[in-house]
Length: 90
Image 1: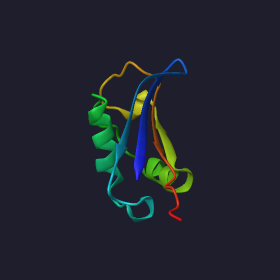
Image 2 (image 1 turned 45 degrees about the horizontal axis):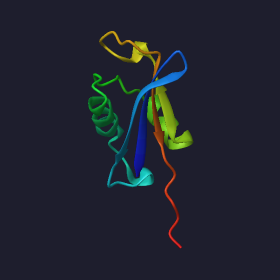
Image 3 (image 1 turned 180 degrees about the vertical axis):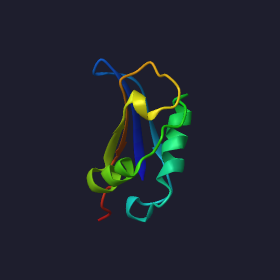
Image 4 (image 1 turned 180 degrees about the horizontal axis):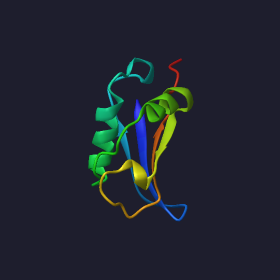
């Protein structure tokens, strides 16, 4: 599964990364470590992952973290996580 991590400020992308994980979206049970890995790659502290964030990933394949979801102060407006749809093999 490919996951896109995006840092936005004033509705503009400041930094982003695409990471590939061996697990499929339907089988994933450890979203906290995946989100933490992406945040670490973007030089961010790990956000507080709530049930709401995990539910949004399951339902919509994306979630948004606001500055209030981080223990430290951050210099951006949003940290977004989006799961790319997997291509069907024909």
